[in-house]
Image (tube, rainbow, N blue to C red):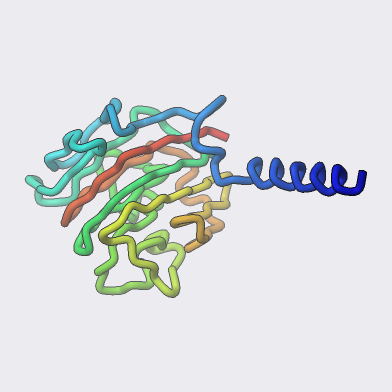
Length: 199
């Protein structure tokens, strides 16, 4: 009897752990897949990069415009969780931009930017930071491997997790709502899954 009780308790603990897994595998009710390993999805484009679907990921490695290029979501988002699986070269400059207030002028002054930039001159706003708003210390390195961002924006509260570890957190309502974008600025960047769940 005691063994059954212990087994039952372990099962309940296991179920609870599954329920608290980050973003619950990014599928199911409420989740919208914006791109995955088989489709680029439907995005507006800002700037010129050679975005393409290649080897199970959306890839960019060349910039034709003077400034950075972006894939811009068709929809506008206010409160949400977004899951992003990405690979970046050591010299990549990229990021996930949130709640952009002006899609004709996308940047870290018109959106919140969860940065992907291992070689940023000022590493306090490098990979894992929210540029200009929330520093990261120490800065993690994303280059040369697959990584996951899980970013939650709910009201004034924005949290960035890189590979399951919180890297930055912000309480700010400068940009309350807007599209999300995937940036290409330099190096090689690959995105193999982007899924979002409005809250």
